[in-house]
Figure 1: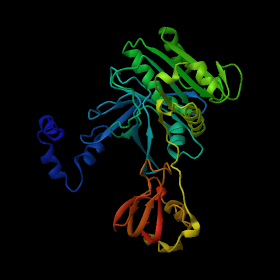
Figure 2: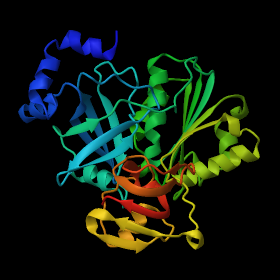
Figure 3: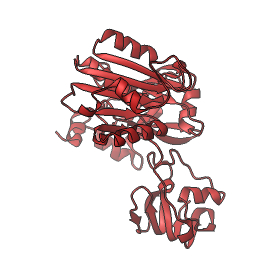
Length: 365
């Protein structure tokens, strides 16, 4: 049964209601009664808030009926209203994919430049309603679970691999699981007590905590070949799942490359896309139409050029993930810094943070 037929079966008068509600969707009226009373959109209500480390907050979320769950390791687009403007970021559920009540956890680390993460850390409360997307992403375990698996994380990158660990233990998986997490100190480990409880309850789970700033962990310092061999001497025979900050990701990739087992490393990271610009070859001008501002093309991204011109376009991740900075290119050609693709069509939506102008470009901001 298609999604459209399913909606007709469950809500036989929906199309009539939406016709009467035009030009707005029916959800715009239902949310006036209660923000969770929506039919087409997916939203989630925060039912509990825990601040387990000095710079992170864990939210338990009850989604609306259109939520279809997730696979361990996937991420969800989360939208919050800040000063009347919706901002969107991606976060990975940390719960088992087999959660019985349909609720899931998100752990958000407050970053100095993170508008959404800082706002959630300071303001999240029970009853807060979030905008959600369907879960997506390919950082997932194989359907046939491996006999051995190494899960490696650092900082808030713990969430997708925590979900994998919880999912495997919920399934009664008997294969060997090693969980290696990197943090500054013991106090900076999210889910520290939960991890220890899982390791104590399941004899096939081995927990290793590595502290980079202090002694006292199972390992000390940053990821090395010695750490890898100590955690999983069988690393060449199975896959390792890794999520964490850029330094950890780069260090692990270098070790796996050098050992000739890069194909065994599965990664998920939200580090900014590498942006390559050549200011010497930049030509033309950038026109910001609504602001009546024109500036020479510096070769930087359109977001950076707008800011340099004194404008303040909305932005979020600055890496091409959240779509907060999407604007209409009214004319000209731009290049996507992530893949080199050119955009030449007029009246086309582009992401300012990952687009550089090629010659004269006009943007509707």
